[in-house]
Image (cartoon, rainbow, N blue to C red; front, side, top):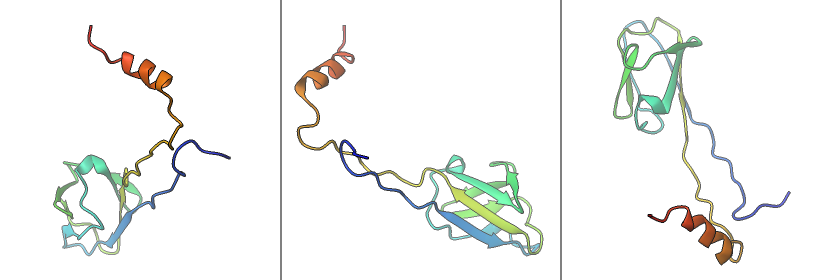
Length: 108
């Protein structure tokens, strides 16, 4: 299959894993600092945890309101792991298409 522009590349999915011990509420550091709670999905033993109620973030550490029980798996999925910039190859965008696109944004 051919592509217009740069070759499509995949970005690895980032997952942090920890284990509860019935006393620790702060876990980390995470592989990377999430932009906010909307940038991660947190599960304890497969049960989704609600941001702001079950946990908060402090930099690249996750802080639970209640310590996860002993031996429970804590899994943190990082969502939107980054982007790669797609640049059209030279000559693939002609003036006709560019002019039509930009005309949609002119002020009237």
